[in-house]
Each structure stands twice: as C-alpha cells, then as structure tokens.
Image (cartoon, rainbow, N blue to C red):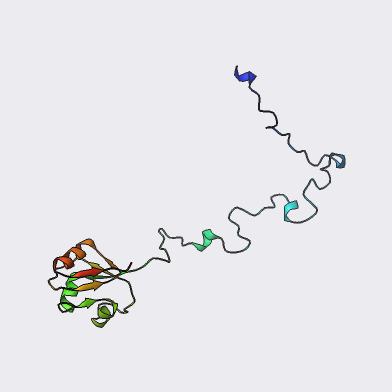
Length: 149
C-alpha cells in the first residue's frame, strides 16, 4: 500500500451544499437563510462571549492583576503572647472572652492563634484556627486546644 492508494472511508466525506443556484436545486431564492432577521444578513451572528445584552463576564471581572474571592475568610490574628498578657490561669478563651478582653471587635469574627511569644498559663483555647507552634506552646504549658469540627 502506498500513499496514492489511500482513500477515505465510504460515507465519511459529504459533498458541500451549493446554495443560490436556482429554485429547482431546493436551495434557491433565500438560500436557506429565511426572509429577514439577523440570520439572513452576512456576518449576522453575535461574537463569542455575547450574553444576550447582559454585561459579559469578561467585563464584570476586575481588570487589575490578581483576584480576591468574595468567599474568602479573613481571620483576626492573635499571638500567644496576647493570651498570656490578657488572661488568668485556667481561663477559657473563646469569642466572648476575646471580646471582653478587647482583642477582637466581635465575638463572632473568625480568630486564628499564632505562636509568637511565650505562654506559661494553663488556658483552654476555643478558636476557629490555630498554628502548629501555638498549639504546641499551649499544650506544653498544660492548656487545651478545642477547634470546631
């Protein structure tokens, strides 16, 4: 078998439809385009990304580099040195206690405890997130860390 022997599989090639060649051809007069409207005009299609008059996605997104998700959770950072300074031994550190000690503005805002500083007091810490170093320091001081499920 050589290159000049190759032929396409039967039925795989269709003849192109020749329009505008008289009414007896079946595709004369309007050439399959109908009478009026957008589809009857040359170039009569909307571009890729056209959303029916709604502002297209490419125009709705921010144009500067980077993107900040609207679902991003901003955590308030609190160091273990802050807990050492503001709480007594055997205290429970939760949203209400942090608000009372003025470390956060609202008891419902998400809080992450970071490991900067030292801690000697035995505390029970109930926050949203905690760094590995902060957890190790709190547990080394005899405290407990409780995270939400």
